[in-house]
Image (tube, rainbow, N blue to C red; front, side):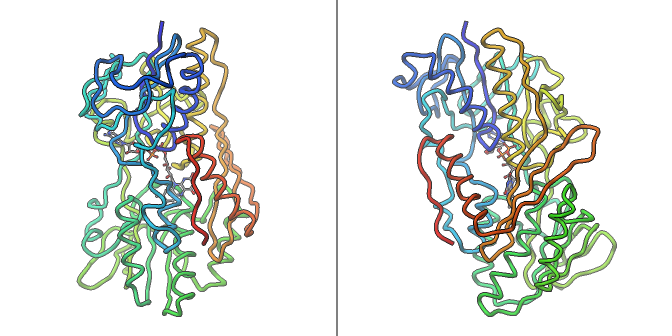
Length: 410
Ligand SMILES: Cc1cc2nc3c(=O)[nH]c(=O)nc-3n(C[C@H](O)[C@H](O)[C@H](O)COP(=O)(O)OP(=O)(O)OC[C@H]3O[C@@H](n4cnc5c(N)ncnc54)[C@H](O)[C@@H]3O)c2cc1C
């Protein structure tokens, strides 16, 4: 019997999962690397790559986007270190003989029957994996769209690059507008990179960071100290335990959760996060996100897993955690296909890179274990780790897309 694995979302989590399970499908199917076209589900619209069916497992990966962009590549584009086209990994270029990619919008998910409706037709699964990430809602913060730049969507980050390129200097406010938010270090990195960007161009520079957290990197006191030291050295104004609730575009002021006002010339904001509408409508989410078993990533629906930003698993919303969770689900899926007990469990570990500007990057090795305080060790910052971070991106594009990728020299 062939097990039909349908993966919803080809981001960090979905790509990792489809790659691991797809390798099994390709290895066990003599025809896997040659066929192309219609699916076992009876739909061929939008499909690319090969027929992944095998005696054991077939993998279908569905995403509506044109391609994948690393979160950290958004910062590279914003601060002029890469062009948009250099950081977009088009799904049309995905070369993975074990995975059938379908470029379509998912419009309904039934977690009981494990049937998914899409703009390319319906798909039925034996095992369904939801890896649809967090949607961003800039309109939820009054004035953000009219008076500021959000830099968390791909389009928003690319537009922020234009705003920064045209900026003649002055007061920059980097701010978070609601919790939870992806990649908690990213606003701190943005403040540091904005400072480097303006000062290296000889422009007037007054950077303020508004954060809901008490420390820049709560699980790692060493990383927090290093970031706060870098802020102090550069004169970056750190405003913890606050959010920006709204902007007044006419007066160019941000209104904070404590009622105070902050004037700005350029506003770079992290917008509100929520599950994609199709997840909210599916009944999978509880209190905003999909609850999962923190060790197995199983939802309360048999045969339905969820990984990454779409869950409330307890790790921060970051690619490295989505990837680690995907590897666990992949191991459990393959164990099920082989009719073996699925022993692999999620350990909550992730290694995050942290940009300090001036080609200095640090690494924070963090572990989140349910019921215990998280711990994180700091390595760096150093120029060597900047090269390490580039290798991290390169390795994943090689593994997921089957092609090489070189980042531009910074
Ligand atoms: C500025 C910035 C910097 C970051 N830096 C880092 C970093 O250095 N390290 C790190 O680990 N993380 C970083 N992140 C966070 C990281 O990008 C995310 O946490 C990660 O991508 C989450 O992976 P995921 O698989 O859960 O979801 P995603 O990667 O967001 O993938 C979800 C996919 O689902 C698709 N989708 C959604 N709805 C539908 C639908 N209805 N139909 C079809 N497809 C749909 C989307 O198109 C998307 O491709 C950063 C984020 C930002 C914004």
